Length: 241
Image 1 (spheres, rainbow, N blue to C red):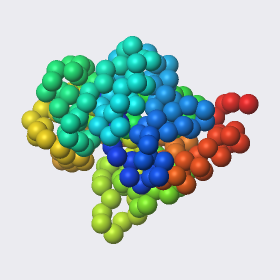
Image 2 (cartoon, one colour):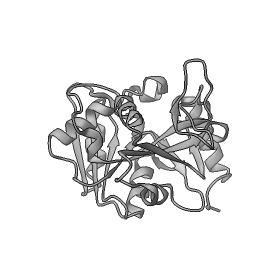
Image 3 (tube, rainbow, N blue to C red):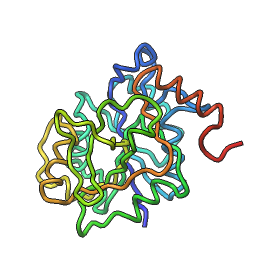
Image 4 (tube, one colour):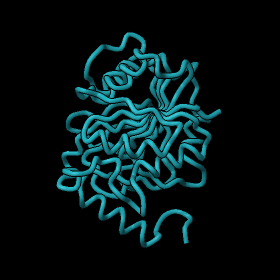
C-alpha cells in the first residue's frame, strides 16, 4: 500500500542555481512546461497520496501562492532553516506527520519512471518490520548531469554503506525516500541533516534502498536545468511522443 502522506522539502536557498533562484525558489523553476514541484505533486497524486506537507523559508510567499492550487497541501513556514532532518523532526513534534510511513522528497527532485512508477516500487519494497527508511538511489553513471563522487556503495553480496572520503561511489541519493515514524524517535531539536538519521538507521541495520530503473536528473546548477530541458524537449526519455 502506498503512503497517503508526503513531505516535500522546499526550504533550501538554491545557491548553486543562481542567478535563477535570485527571484524564484528552486522548486518553482520551470522544467518541461511547469514548475519542478508541480511534476512531483502530480506523480504523488497518481499513486494515491492524499496529503502534502511542504516546508518553505526562502521566498516563501511564492510557494504559499503556488500551494493555493493544491487543497490537499499544508505549507509549513520555517523562520529559521532547519535543514532536511530538522525540518521533518519539527513536523513530527508538531503532530503533522502520520503514525504510518510517509514519503519524503526533496523539492528539486525530478525523475522519469522506468517500467513501473518509482514511488510504487518504493512502497512495495518498504518493510517497516526491518526498515526505518528506504531510499531511492540512482546510478551515477546514468544520471543526467554531474553527480560528483556519489553517496553510497552497495556491493551485490554486501550491505549498503556510505562512500568513504577517498571513494567514488556508484550510487547517489535521488532525493526520494519512504520514512517510518520510528526513524524520528529521539531525533534532536533544531537544524540538522537527514544524514544524521540515516547514520543511526545504518548502525541499527534498518536503512535499505532500491535502485531507480528510469532516468534521474540532478538539478543543481543552471547548466543542469538546461541539459534536462534539452533532453526532455528532445523526448529522449519517457513515454511522450
